[in-house]
Length: 267
Image (cartoon, rainbow, N blue to C red; front, top):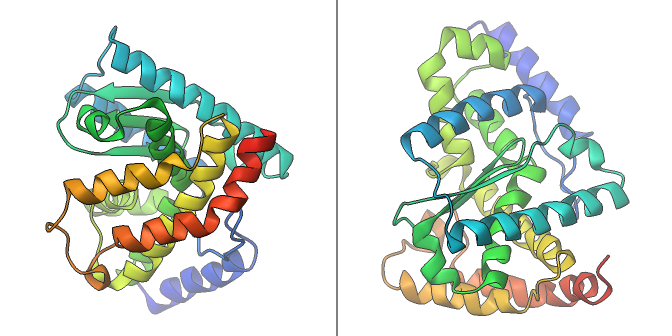
């Protein structure tokens, strides 16, 4: 790639930084990629994932994931429309699936494709805690954190090109970056952004869950359970893409008065 192409990509980044902001925090973002293309790419990867990991059907747990996901999505739509940001979820076709994996995990791709892993449910333990997690993962998609992370990776690797060109010229590398941006894995070079994303998703997700009728105060107990489950197995915070459990819980408690306003009023 020529230096001219890279410069053009960076110039575009500067323009987008000035006009793209995260809901609630209003932090400026560098989102180089058209969201519509990411939604299309996410659908392909989502379908591939479900072929390899067939969704659980006809169980109480699967029904619970559907119920909670629908309530949280309704809250997301209400919140975004009330705040004149409905365009950020334009074209979303919500889906909520449970897969039979022991991993303690969940994620949401652009377009509203949500997957919950069965291994998460023994930790959430109740409907409200599941809503806290699903709200958090949906918040990542609504805040376009994956777009931001993928944009950072493309610039860092000198890929100052359009997404469709990247997919054509470097399909494996581009797909790998996409899965990293919306799933697990990161690099030390973008840790600050990743921690920022997690904190933003905690705040925004708490509002979504509260608006859906779930008590946000139960989020503290959930993260304490997560902390106990992973005790001794986490790297120091400075080497982690996520805030430490203690930091996360402290941040949640500080944000709780704001979240409770949405829970009490339902709007």
